[in-house]
Image 1 (cartoon, rainbow, N blue to C red):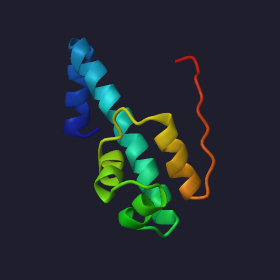
Image 2: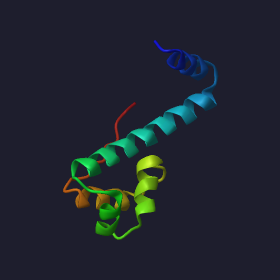
Image 3: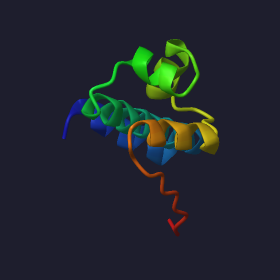
Length: 93
């Protein structure tokens, strides 16, 4: 296990606020990475996708890099422009 992973594990076990913020940030990062990968797999640039969903390139960049507080309607447009379906699931932790 890397030193970073050891530090994160130790810090999460002693600091509940850090644990919550870390996990929340990680989930947002994963969403952004998935969206970026889907866009790249479709062979689109950020600018091309932005034009398809009537927004700006900077908005696409913000979604891919931060993925914080994205509206479902935006996710739906993003997915549809890439020829994908959007599935939202709520499950027990």
